[in-house]
Length: 142
Image (cartoon, rainbow, N blue to C red):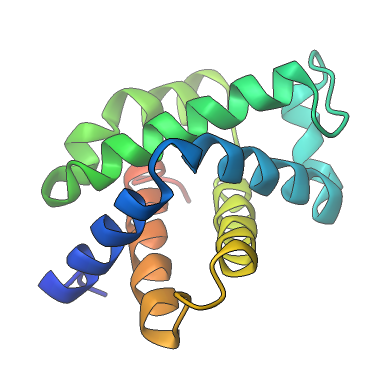
């Protein structure tokens, strides 16, 4: 599944539209992930995971920053996300299925906030992008 020029353009265009609200949407996606997939909370036992908490917002912003970095470096996701991959897979021992859960919840969140823009083509482009991010974060996971 290759990210085509059209996919890249669609993802970049949406990210420009999201602008400074990326952190708001990634925070909402995290909250959805914790609710829909409770096992994901095990990595955050030290945080206040109640909706709207400052700690969830802070982690949501970290996710936003990482995804924005990925959007800005679509041609080298493995290199761009290598440090995050090492942190999440080797140090934190995060099961990569959790990245898929978060990606799914981000798609739902964005579709909810941008229904007029969220065409099947945009969904496919975003899904490909998130799949590539997940592969870059967990390249050797078995």
